[in-house]
Image (cartoon, rainbow, N blue to C red; front, top):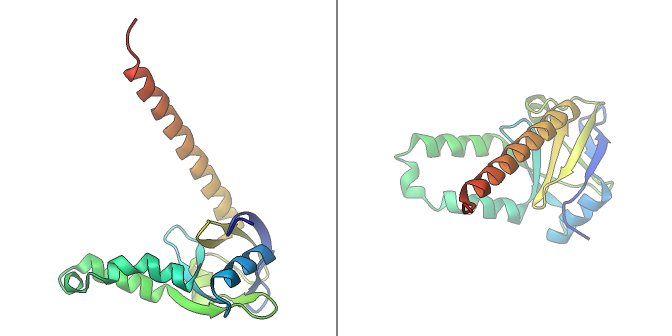
Length: 161
C-alpha cells in the first residue's frame, strides 16, 4: 500500500471531530503505534497532519540555527507561526481526531460540513471542499504553464537544419 495517497470526502461532526479514512489511519499507525500526530495550519488554508517523526524532521534544520534566531526577525516569526499553528493530537480508537476550533476557523472547516482529506505522501491535508477545488485549478494552471515552458525551451534548443 502506498502511504498517504488518495483523496476522500469526509464530514466534520458537530463536535469538531473528523473520522479519518482507514488507509490514512493505517499509514499513521505504521509510523507510530501510539497514533500521535501533529496538526499544522498551512498558509494556503488547509490543515496538515503529519506523523511526529516527519514533523520533527521537517523542523530539524531550522531549529538547528539557534544562534541565528536571536538576530533574525524572519526566523522568529517563522517559529511563532509554527508554534502557534501546530499542536499534537492522538487518533482515537474510533479513528477520530478533534480539530481545534481556532484551526477549523482559520481553515474554513465548519462543524457538520463535508471536507476533503488528501494524501500528500508525507502526511495528509484537510481541505474545505471549495478551497480544494480552487487548489486543484491552481495546480492544473501551474502544470500547463510548466509544460508550455518546457516545450518552448526544447524548441529554442533544437538545432537549425
